[in-house]
Image 1 (cartoon, helix red, strand yellow):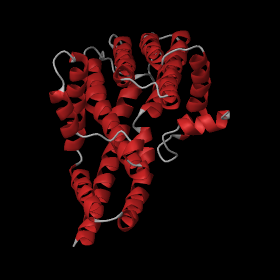
Image 2 (cartoon, one colour; image 1 turned 180 degrees about the horizontal axis):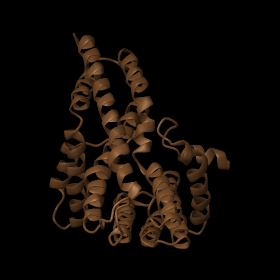
Image 3 (cartoon, one colour; image 1 turned 90 degrees about the vertical axis):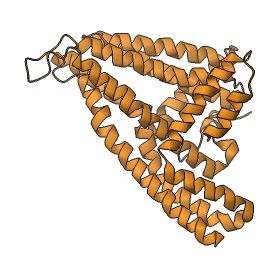
Image 4 (cartoon, helix red, strand yellow; image 1 turned 120 degrees about the horizontal axis):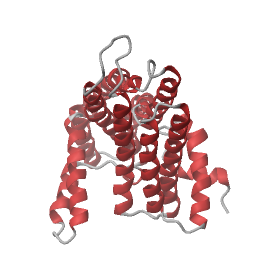
Length: 322
């Protein structure tokens, strides 16, 4: 029988792509929940649905200005994240993977943050901008829209794409969820209308893939050249290029982690608690500026470095094919 440590290791995607906080905090706690709920026969999808309600509850708590509600918001969002970790670990360890589970997993995080953005905007709408006598009014909703739709969404989707690319070159197709628009669109078109749920999923997922591909022109060129090289050369010939790509991609994995959940959650925790202690002079509005300024700088740096790496690797493949 596998030990707890062995099960924990098996639940990781890879050491390259796992964040320190997840490895040492979120995943171990998530595995405890996994073993408990698996013993009780709870399906991963039920856990994901529970996480949606917990995340939505956190958003309502962060809409309040007192310390007690904000601490409860921290606890609820942490529990939601443990549940999110649990459903993924359970699915990988037990093989209980379904299309509905995949949809819910992607949907859950969007619901959490939508509720948090709405909660923060509602909280601040009637307050004045720090250092002025001007009310936030509808401007806080504009700020929330910019932070959530124009910043958070593209940041997290590209971060996920780069992690899947890294996993593909590290573990192969079986160890990655690297998909493309053409394949997913073909699945959408091949499904009959009676399979409306699957058809709807592949329609939106294909467009999600397309948005990732439109922002990564250099990688698309490199990947096309790589696939052609795989048909002409054996693994030994391509291994140096694979290793060189991984060497260049590995330092970007911390960028992808910073652009996903933990950095955002920690900023929300600190900003909302600080707001409850300072009457929102130092408060949750800081989270929106963190999204728009700090995370966008990281996003631009990550994107530029990855595209430069792909351009270099494309030249290497061209030299090999010459």
